[in-house]
Length: 74
Image (cartoon, rainbow, N blue to C red):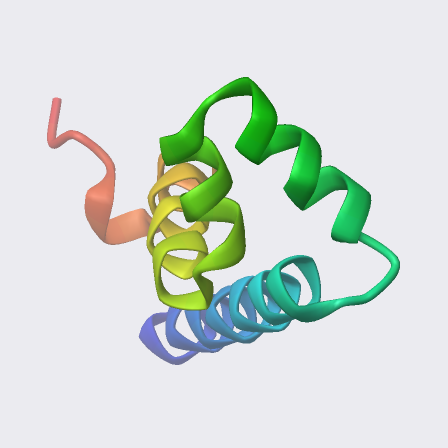
């Protein structure tokens, strides 16, 4: 059970990392980054920075996915 949970978390980490790199470095998504920067400077910076994008994406995915050890005990 623990091994399966760790495998799921590892897959989630790989998916978040790959998605963050594609979103922040891809030429195809340059327009999205420019629009985010025009709407709100901090959002534009978050979309341009790979490290920032990985942090926000992992926070969002952790809240949505809610791994077993983050489940409330009650």
